[in-house]
Image (cartoon, rainbow, N blue to C red; front, side, top):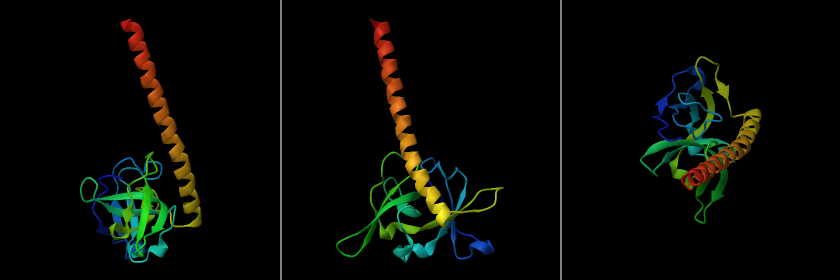
Length: 165
């Protein structure tokens, strides 16, 4: 998610010690809607053992500007010097992100606050299973959409060439 937002301390007692991020963008549209507030556990940045493949993390993304991105972890990798890197991908994106260094991690997303609905906990076995399903489904859905877009563009080109002849 590009332009994810600014970290704030969540004052709700049930989320004491967590941070909250308001999300914008479409890269995680299969799970988050623009405007949702995400509950982030900052302890995960100190203990990477809390982060596994399938989890969603917030991290500093320096590709365009110093912004916060929120994407799903696909692989957790150990470097030769003992560091940790993460391969991430937005559920709504077709391609993977560049590797994320452990130092870029802000925390692990553990819940969604969507007004006026009740909070949604995603840091559970059911949430994890749903996340893996969404990841697999979204990849093929985005791929199918791109194939359809390419086929439509090719058909339009053929029609244009036929009319020009």
